[in-house]
Length: 100
Image (cartoon, rainbow, N blue to C red):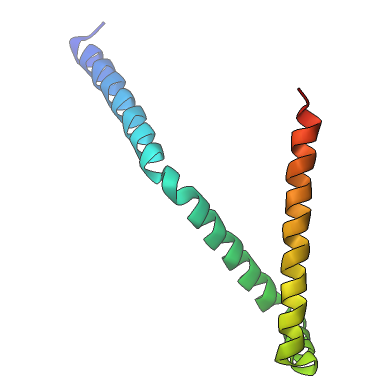
């Protein structure tokens, strides 16, 4: 084989290994950002959805105005309690399903 081709193959092998090491380092350094970036992505998706369905946003605003802020606060508090109960039950059911 030509010396130039051998050097090119060795250089390519070195560069491929270097790129793999850089990808691994980048993955490791970005791991703590995965959850916040996913949350931001969901937020942007919600904004895009509301932009494409403006009547839904207007309807929700009118609903909140009609209910008055004190009622909305009561509903949100009740919804939060129900969500926490459901989450706890789901966690307990997961533990029970695993078994001893």
